[in-house]
Length: 355
Image (cartoon, rainbow, N blue to C red; front, top):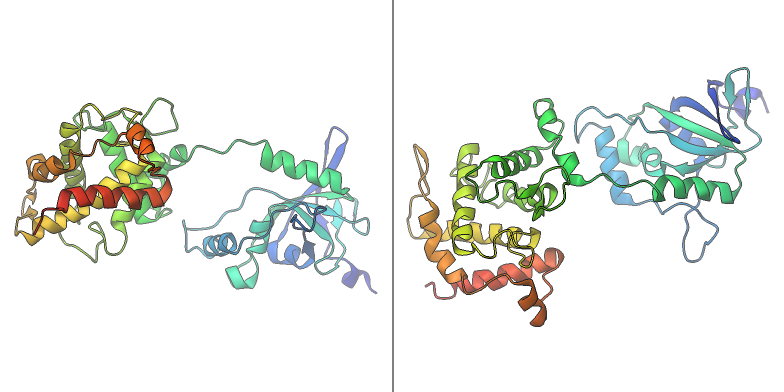
């Protein structure tokens, strides 16, 4: 077999020594590396495997990112970490990687990034990626590196990530519903007259009733198809000022009725479950106002105020959002199932006597 067939094209690489470990850093076409890459999934039946299984949903998402369908032009600055066999070697500043299809480069970290370059997920798109390559690592050392990278690092608080969104708005690098929700949360937290003033953890700080990421998650659904802030569903709430004022007035009505429970962690009123269910309720209230021919907006913007919501909130006031009471009644109100359960409860109270 010729050298050209036995090895990939020689790659310039840098030798790095850290303690007793030596590895080599280089760049290579992702699709070229993928051809010789493999890994070993750890399962109940394969206790010698190291990696997590490849998740198709993650591969699809990263593939869309690589094709520029999510967050603009793609960039992957983090290194893929691999272990090469002793058939590959480093000499005179160049790395010679054995050309064994799906059998040479064991991927220790970055498998989803690398396999997303499969044509099924990213089409013909290719790019150079950064790689750190060890030689002949035994399974124990592979496992140690994997554990150190994925087990020791602390995940960044999502609220801090969301707080960076204003820097990206003009670049179209984040989807509309994401940056718009962040903008609304920022307004609700920053306006001194807002019932949410300084109550939202914007960058992961402790002592707040709800995080920016949780509030944004609750808000984003209002921009989905079939909901009141969706551009194709309603002409009433297309203006950003109108959206903000609607939420301001609605939550002000809630705050007026629930002054004791507001911003109190013994209640779930201001936590994700409560906020999400209340936003569902808001959409029903808007529908009811329209059904009763009550004007929502005019040429000057939003016409309904805190007072407009009072008849609905008066009926809701029978429910006090007490975590202790809910627990004693056997209601957990956890996750999206909890949101649905809570929404059924409060909407039943508000609209039970409506004709």
